[in-house]
Length: 493
Figure 1 (spheres, rainbow, N blue to C red):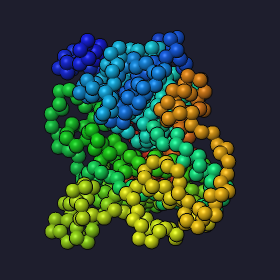
Figure 2 (figure 1 turned 90 degrees about the vertical axis):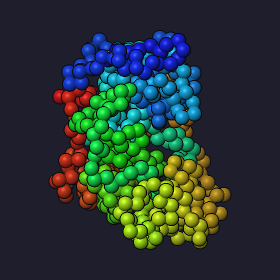
Figure 3 (figure 1 turned 30 degrees about the horizontal axis):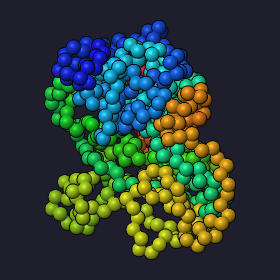
Figure 4 (figure 1 turned 180 degrees about the vertical axis):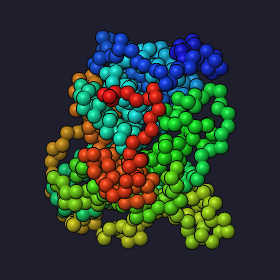
């Protein structure tokens, strides 16, 4: 397909954009060597940015970065012409009159070549892998939304390429990794605030979309302004149907990781950072309802087992998501048809929540998202799904500790999360981006092991070195996805 310049009135004629496009031959697409760019800043001292994904989180990333003075937007890519017409967040459109528009990110990166310094990837989860791999293989700095990929094998390939291209600046979009609370939690823990950590509990009200689906959507005609074949990315081609996009892609294992894929890279980030967690050696499914081979459950409880580390002994992290039927809901004659994921269920559902630790204020309800990090002397409570300054409880423990808080010794973020990525590019120091792929890939692998356990509906004993489940051979079929021709980049074969 061809790129289109934005008309002077800053609007794209959708029909003209679509009918004038020439479809790329997916199976035969090759990026020529002359297109390979070099890392670093363009001669005009601006970071020339190309965005893959123009609304949703991709649009939010695009708008935030458009406010950074060093950023110059040169390319926009989305499979939906409506999103290309109005790139940006829900409240803030992005004006990029000189940016070329594309449906296919492979063509965009080939066409713009060394005019691009950096790339954002803000698409459904299954597209993160090929888009990031191609960008890195062409020498582009990459900001990729969470989770880094949708399958474990893919995240390992992204880590390998990031290590090989060590002069590139990478960052995963778990935005609160730049927050002060992350560093305070580690400094406080290592100063003995909660004693020796024993267990971690993380909960979320997700999913807020359908789950437990037993059949794929019924085929229907593809709308004319949408490139369905490109949206599918590396997955096996299937008929288009209503129910895959935009937000509900996480209803399907092929395209997302359910509640884990939406929230876990945010909420597990604190424990991952504070305790420098390795990959879990075992994942248990303690509870799961309505999950199927093709669709995540509507509620689940999963326990991750971590081996001893530098500042902790054997450690468990228990994850709680979703909702279950209340007693009233169970009495309904059509209880199996109640959309438990939907807020309309109201008093017919009850959230899956942990039991608070000893010292939690009596009768104080838990928020819909949060976490406890429990030690033998007290516990950290972090409300919400993002990293925040921890609250040290019980109150008696806080009174004892607050006068002896340790000095701030850990490196702080340079700036807000996205700006930190830009600053690292400008300064030529990839380590300044603190949620780089070297940090974020192991976190993503942990999250996807939860998906693997749920999808196989079994306990997982994990050999991370060899990317294998050792106790359930059948589960290994979910470690590496099918990848069709034209969608595999940056891997030496």
